[in-house]
Amino acid sequence: MKILFVYYTGTYNTRFLTDLLILRLEEHGHICSRVEIERGVPPADTEGYDLIGFGYPIYGFNSPLPFNRYVNTLEIERGQKFFIYKNSGETFAMNNASSRILLRRMKRRGAAFAGEYHFVMPYNIHFAFDREFVREILDKDEKLARIMIDNLERGEISEIGSNFIYNVASAAVSVQKIGGCVNSFFYKVDKEKCVRCGLCVRNCPEKNIRLDRGKIKFGHRCDMCMRCSFFCPTNAVRIGFLEGWKVNGDYRLSEILEDTSPRAPYIDENSCGFYRCFIPYFARIDAEYAKKFKDD
Image (cartoon, rainbow, N blue to C red):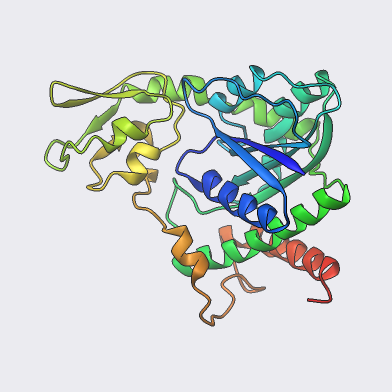
């Protein structure tokens, strides 16, 4: 199959997943292309592809605004097959509603739904995940990637159910446009820590940060991806009202994925609090993987 990946990434979790999926698909002999969404990237040519994969991180139970805007510019032929791969730092059911806008737009264009998959990736806000927890998450992502590829090759459709309540609640808390604009008035850089490396300026997907006469300045079209603060080498970027939830520092996901040393499960039946939501999610992936690949 010839597959086009169209994705938006904030702190590169979705890019990491896209790399993983393309690697595994190419191992199966498929031909893959990609378009990473940033401000100024022209609409992708979608003609001639057997499948289009749409990927994004879930922001506050919604798909990112830059992703929605970009998808709206694409020419999609009637009957074009597409699938969704999305990710978040938790498995809350309301995340299921995040694809409602994309699904509605694809339905209007007569596209053919080929499946939807929810991957877990480590937080880039709220709090940092432990390395051992990230290892377990990536193990499940590898399994889900293999499940997804097998389904796509067989034409089996995996659906993630939402409902009216989730859809309404998700729409009600969609504050990216207002929140990003308002919060950006309070972004600042710690002058004592900033080394003027320009990484935040170069990396911003919305081109919302500039270096003006030696000073870092923020515009007001932030989509709250947190890339500037997450990757700042000196932790100098202050993100307004969200400062108390900031996570700074690369997880080095590729290194963690390659670490195959023995370990005990991080999530088990004794996990409590926030971590309990991962028990049924991990169990479902393990059960489906065992069913599909029982001869491995």
